[in-house]
Image (cartoon, rainbow, N blue to C red; front, top):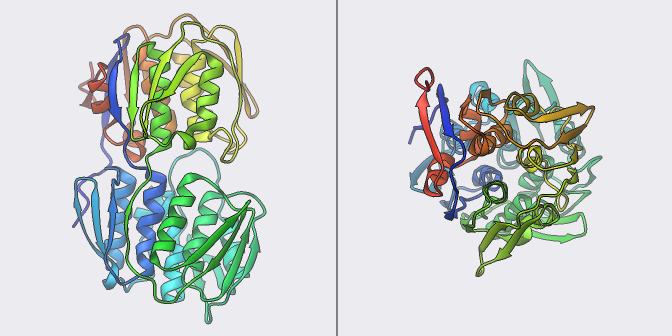
Length: 429
């Protein structure tokens, strides 16, 4: 089945000031779905992924599998993958450059075929995000590694257990190592690993496939198996989408109920919202109710690895703090180039200055509608949020970034009462 989603020249036009209220359901996690899709390379048996979001990155990952030889069927939010036909070990440059997560094909290709040739990744322009930790791991695991012509070439003769410590905490580095070691017999150890819920969801899948994995602190012990089985798995909810709707509820000031949420995954976000003056409460097993208490307080936020405050929520909080009285500070510790949304927010009347990795946000009474450009996935969400509260009309361009990570965001916002529509570029006036 071929991808039906492509990059488009479309914009979102938003009329600010609409009251948001009602219920909204969060989609499955993009950042959990992608490594799980690549995990299917490790087996020849059918795999079923439930609650997968309908996103560009997911379509690109499936298209990459198809090129490698797999077959898949997609019905709604359920994907059935038959990876038995995978025979190729080289990934095409055009797809990999669209989606950084395709670097996760390295581990399973090397694990199943003992060789892989993967184009250097692309994705959002939020920083260098080097893959040196990936390559250091593969070298320690006994692979021959070379980088030539924009491709990483990997080859291993005999797969052996390994003990490896990451120099720094890396989500995709941890995932790539797990995807390889799941097929390596004997016990391996990974230290200083990422603990994000999306990583743990991959661990859950690999255990279903037959790997034995235990976690203690930031140390994973993996006992792999040469013959891994297929799986049936429901992806965890997208905590960043949930967090984005929490901010939308705070900005709106009215009551929103967000369904399909794991509140434990949002602890740091909820703590910051509570300090800000937003009331978040649990409703049932998997829903959160968000309202605003009326007064807004400035915040000091520093992004960090899970369970700290997520870098993927930094831009959305910048929008919220731009209309919060007083001066807030946001320190970006994960990516060196993740304040590109600031200049666009300032176009809308925000008063934000940047010094190195720190943003100083002086709250203003009102944002004003403007035409703004998305620069990356989370920046685009922050601009949509800004448009919802701005006076007048906001046009958000380059929304293909948004489509990489948010499943039908404008449709969900419409159901909450937002006045928002998707239009071909040039027809927004």
